[in-house]
Image 1 (cartoon, rainbow, N blue to C red):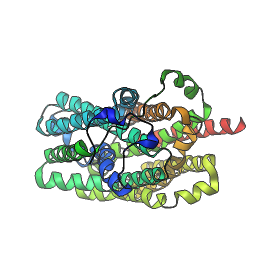
Image 2: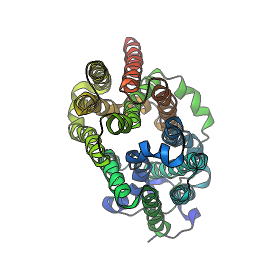
Image 3: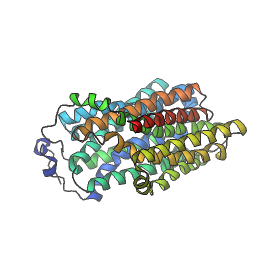
Image 4: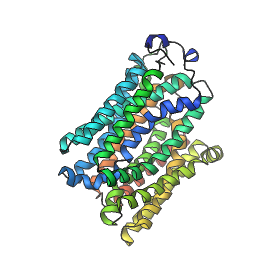
Length: 404
C-alpha cells in the first residue's frame, strides 16, 4: 500500500500519507504494543519451574523478569532520540527483529546465564518496537480525533494481556513444554514484522528539535515527578504481584499452573472492569483526586494483604482478593498519571514520554526487585512493602503539589 522509501515521508504530520482506517491501523500497530507485555505475562506460569530447569536460584530467575522490565524503560531514552534521528520504521523493524530472534534462541537455550542475557536482549528489542509504535501514533494522530481512540483501544487491549497471557502460557507449557512459550512469541513477532514491512511507512516529521534542552524543565517539574511516581506505584504494585504470585500460589498454596493462571486473571479482570468507568471518575474527581484515591486503595490493599499474611495461610482469599482492591487503585492512578505528568510539555512530548516511562521502569525494576529479594518472595510482604512505600511517597508529593 505504501512505498518503502523513508525519505518520501519526511514531512509535516498533517500531510503524512498514512491513509489507514482506525481498525486497519490498530491491526498493524497493536501487535508491537501487545508483544512487549505478553513476553512478561505468558512466561509467569513456568517461572517457579525455571529454577530447576536451568539449575539456578530463584533470585537469578527473578532477574529474567526484572531485567526485561528495566530494559523496556531504559530503551525508551535510547530509542526515542534514535527514532527522531533515523526514523520510526528502522527502529521498529530492528526492534521486532531482535525480539523475534531472541525469542527463538530462548526456546533453545538451557543455561541460566545465556537465558538471562537473552531476556535482556528481548527487552531491548521490545523497547525499540514499543517506542517506535508510540512515536508513530504521535506523528500521525497528534492533531486528529482518532488519536484518542487509538490510545484508549491500546489500553483496553493491554488490560486483556495479564488476564489471558498466563492462561495461554500455562496451556502451552502443559501441552508442549516451556520452550513452546518462547517459540510462540517468536512466531508472533515474525508475523507482525512481515505485516509491517510492506505497510508501515516512515512517519518521522522533518525539523525535529534537539531533545537535550528539554530535559531540565521536565526534571524540575514537581507535577511531572508526582504523577510519574504515582504511575510507578501503580505499575510496580502489579509487577511485584506477578513476581510473587507464582511462588505464593503455586509454591505455597498448591495451585496448579492453570489454576494459578485463572486466579491471576481475576486481578486483571478487576482492572478491565474498572477501566470501563475511568472517564466518569476522572471527570468527577479530576487528576489529583483520582490519583489520591488510587494511592489510598493501594494502601488499603496492602493492609489486607498484611492481615492475610499474619493471620492465615496463603490462599486465594488472603492473596488474590486483596489484589482486587489494589487493581482498582491501579486503574484510578494510571488513568490520570500520563496527563498529569505530561500536560505542560506538549512541545517536547517525545522526551517527556521517554522520561516518564524510563523513570517508571527503573523504579519498578530496581525497587520492585529489591522488595522481592529482601522481603521473601514466597510471601505477600514484598507487595505490602512496595505498595505502602510508593503510595505513601506519592501521597506526600501530591499534598506538597496541592499546597503550591
